[in-house]
Length: 225
Image 1 (spheres, rainbow, N blue to C red):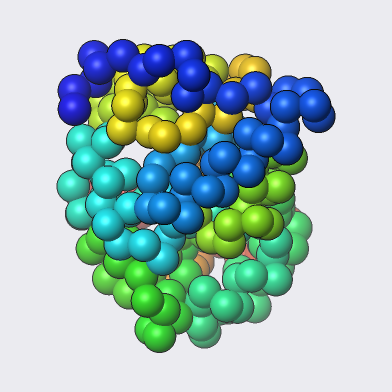
Image 2 (cartoon, one colour; image 1 turned 90 degrees about the vertical axis):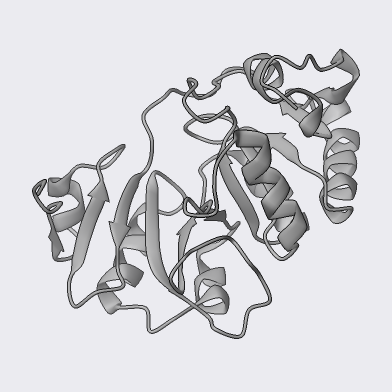
């Protein structure tokens, strides 16, 4: 599939109203259970999601974006308490950041539980976790469990802030598009690596260094080589 493949409007589901949200989420849950892809709203941009524990679905996500395994997708979870089910040896500072900023614009890179039956790509034994601050996303996540989610766009194209833009880029590679109206904006989450001897920012986004340091000792990104 190319990024110009159109999508029929029947794949787009309105989740802005309670009357339509339940049936749309039912359809999305069923699609994810079959190993298909779903586009969902988040508190930053729209994301393309797959069952994190279905390797062919994660590969389909990477293929839809035109991305290689060297760029594994983050995993979205519904609640902070899920952290310990997916990660081990989580530093106290990382826990404090999660408690302070989840749900919200913080992505934590932590050591993945080695017993988990998943394949997100070339992760080096780590996983990037986030709890999104969007009611539709969290309602879906409560029903599906952890989802591998990346921005809903072809690699090199702008991230989608409305469902129709995601559909224009991703086309029929996605089974269901959950349309919650425009997302808040293009500012991404701040990414903090908590796998080393000290925590370090990998990418600035919604949260700046001052906000992070009010909660835990976090180092600035390494300067370019």
